[in-house]
Image 1 (tube, rainbow, N blue to C red):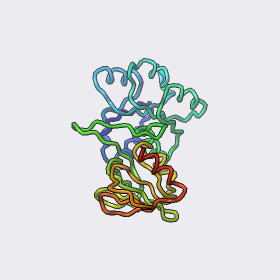
Image 2: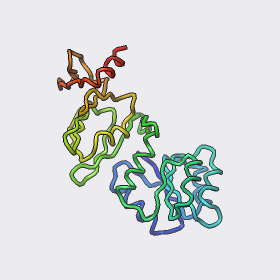
Image 3: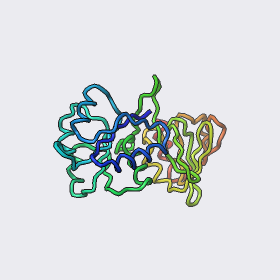
Image 4: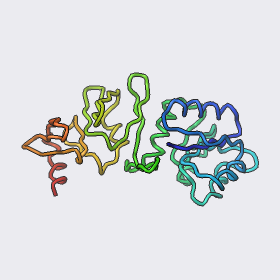
Amino acid sequence: MIRYLIIDDEYIAHDIIKNYCDLLPNMLLMKNCYNALEAFEYLNKNAVDLIFLDLNMPVLKGFDFLKTLNNPPRVIVTTAYKEHALEGYEHNISDYLLKPFGFERFLKAINKAFIKSSAQATVIQNNNSISSRIFLQSNKKYIQIEISTIQFVEAAGNYIKIITTSETITIREKLSALLALLPTNDFLQIHKSFVVAPKYIKSIEGNRIILTSKHIIPIGTLFKANILQLLK
């Protein structure tokens, strides 16, 4: 469960963010704060995983508020002022949403907030289990999947198929775009159209890989070096 806080002095901003979050599973609103002092008081006694933070607020501005936090959670800035973007990244924020923003851009920010910039997955503690998740759009709906369940990914034209331990999900996206969301240490490209999770490899036979699920994946000539690196 991703526990989040909205800090914004505009009521309509709270409604928009909450409506977007309600479209996603495992997003839990902890509190609506309409100024930074209210949020500061809440965070002194409670923990959250994510803050949606406006910058231009009365009494205490957004970035000044961040300076008061010893261990800030992930932060997505939501503002109408693009000139503060550079300063935002100096505060190590996860993303910078320029108002007004649509759901697709919002979803990208959520994914970015929980995937490190180096494409290494971060973990979310959830009822004694640790998992890493991303949201993917498929057939006009958004599906949350655990990265650890992905066995392999196959590119097919303008679409890619994500084969997990329980289902196959087809999305309209480039393979390179999905790879940017996946942890590099946990996935290996072995063909221009295939990426596999090494932990699901059962055997390597000639120019093909057999997975524990009995799927057979070809090894591309240009990607044999990746296999050799894996075997070292």
